[in-house]
Amino acid sequence: MWGSLYRYVSLRLGSPSKGIEVTIVVICLMLMNAPRAVADLSAAGLDRGFGRLYDLDFNGAQREFESWEKVNPENPMGPVSEAAGILFSEFDRLGVLEAQFYEDDSVFAARKKYEADPQKRAHFEQQLNRAEELAKARLSRDPRDRDALLAMTLSNGLRSDFAALIEKRNLASLHYTKEATAWAQQLLAADPGCYDAHLASGVSRYIVGSMAAPVRWILRLGGVAGDKAGGIAELQTTAAQGHLLAPFARILLAIAYVREKDLPRARELLLALQRDFPDNALFGRELARLDQRASR
Image 1 (cartoon, helix red, strand yellow):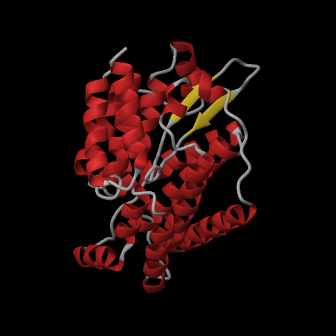
Image 2 (cartoon, one colour):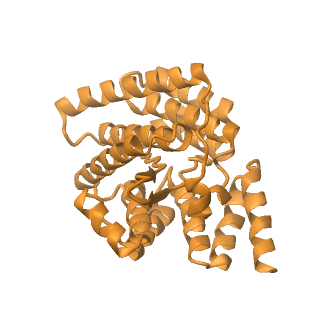
């Protein structure tokens, strides 16, 4: 998500007349359950598919996902990964993957409602429904199934993204955001070593922690807690020790550093991302924009 896969994350509580505006792009991906499964996953192409998403090669990513799904038809990570590819190809087409769009809360608040491609919208929902059905079947057999918990986390995060960034349905987005965070917490309880899972709670903690005290209090009553420093620490954990989500965590950290006026660290991350994903022109554009800001 995303970038990328870009998971640009913003959370804003406006005046009572404007209501709650929430968007979270939580793309929480991880490996299979056992060492042998990890090797099979990598060889079969799931992580190659997400690598292609980071390079904005959406068609190539979908080919990898479809190929992996044929070998793993009962695993919910197949359809949920396809849904992620569909959503982020729409984000790219509509221009919502630009980091600058999220840097200014007033710009985000004034965002327009977009029109998604109807066929892609239908396919997106179909894949998410399939992923959730497969995940719940696995959870009925094993409540600690990592792939199933991961798929539920990702599915709710993707629904939140679509509701907020394309349809501008802010309350619906808040509902899905809370669901994604709850599933991520279950995932971490089942496997504390799933460093990719820290991204979901990390972005929520950072954004809510950035809000004014009265806003944080209201959100806390709704079950959404904030901790700015703690959120950044969780993103750093995913960036350093995560697998499929490590590049995405670096993207989110770059955005956080820009918000914190730490342009050198943001630039360092973007340079590394540009090196690792040379076909993604977004990183170069953001670097140029940062350089312009630094020269002012």
